[in-house]
Image (tube, rainbow over all chains, first blue to last red; front, side):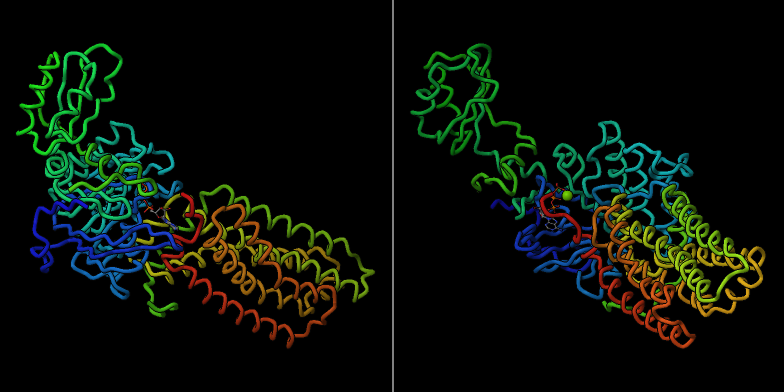
Length: 339
Length: 252
Ligand SMILES: Nc1ncnc2c1ncn2[C@@H]1O[C@H](COP(=O)(O)OP(=O)(O)OP(=O)(O)O)[C@@H](O)[C@H]1O
Ligand SMILES: [Mg+2]
């Protein structure tokens, strides 16, 4: 497993320094392990991305941390309060959850929905809070619309307004943009970005790697177990520092002969687009050290008569990191860990 | 956390009641249930009693009265079954159950709030319909029939059984609603399961058991105990984890 921690483990854990502290958290459902031995820390004010394929255990983790279900083993602290029997109500008051579906009463208006939740939280100054929450998601003009008449994107914004009502210390957002069109998704992401200014800790679950990369200070990638954790750029560097990408003007006749004989090259792979015999071609080489091995690779290519267009370390996106780590998902074979 | 907490927050429970009532009022299905069932269950007994003329011999009349009142008792049984079955399954279907359970609301508050929101209109409708029936008997039935009806122990029994049967239906409906994923299935099961206590009333109607005031008090006491027990059981089903994971997650 690759664990990239931007801060040494021991440094976190003192009071006030962690918003969410998860230690060896495990959840089993009738013999099936949904979350296995997961540990991580989220700092106050951080936007923390929690990535993983379907069935990775993201929602299960959110539910454990928001006291909806109890962990099979392990421990957690949320907003400085241990997640233990008897302390749940305290945690519930200090967190807010946006579940996978917005969960609004279709027959009630936007305000009635928010009013109900404000009362469940036992909040004072309800009208002022509701007005402020609606203003924050720019929905003041829809206050009296029944939620059933709103588009999915607007419903998600109402749900987001609901999570603002109790001024939470930690917000859990479970796939807030799933099912939204790009414009609606952009809106919602903008609103989440604005939460940063409020100083609230955001625990964001998503499939969308681009949005995690854009929005999150750190991301954890999980697939039942925690695969890696770190800053998006760090993850990219750690995982791809041993790859050399070369591009040639035309596909090589016998790439095996060219790359096979080089001592630094452990293996190679043609880019998917390559192989129809025409146009430029790309190759990914697994090397011991891209900088040291590049000259030999280029020499070999030139010797073989190829026109080298470029050679260098690939700009891996977080998406590549993700695919690399979780492969076919928790049920499928995970590719070998590389570290 | 205790299974049955005593101190619960009244404003929060009231918020649940208020929200449920607003939601019911705007559900065409529930409004129709509240309107159509009472109408059917009122028409049949009223017509039966009005059709009976002076020739009434007392035993035959008592039997007819019993059956009429049995019809009226279907109101506090059927209406709560339908609405209670919707109470949790409907929230699950709209995805509102999960956000509600992430708030500090206690399960007793949620349970009592939902139960009250079902009980108040159902018992209200049942008493109004019962009142209309008695009013019609007094005004329109022959005096002999009317005086027999008002002297029968079944009449006060009806008044006592309405809330007790409604409570039973509510707990059964809420239990099924919490455990059965599909709303329609929960409603059908709920109606069927809420009928058994009616059997007792049925036995009285057909004069298998001769109802005396003492016997009626005994039955009422029994129902009260059963209702209390049912509340305790349902309150255990309202555990957050059970509500969230209880229904059909396997395979998704
Ligand atoms: N109530 C439950 N009973 C049994 N198994 C469950 C239950 N809830 C979740 N699981 C299983 O646990 C695993 C993790 O599920 P979870 O919903 O946490 O994944 P996820 O990462 O949120 O997936 P998705 O991206 O699809 O939302 C899955 O294999 C799922 O089938
Ligand atoms: Mg999920």
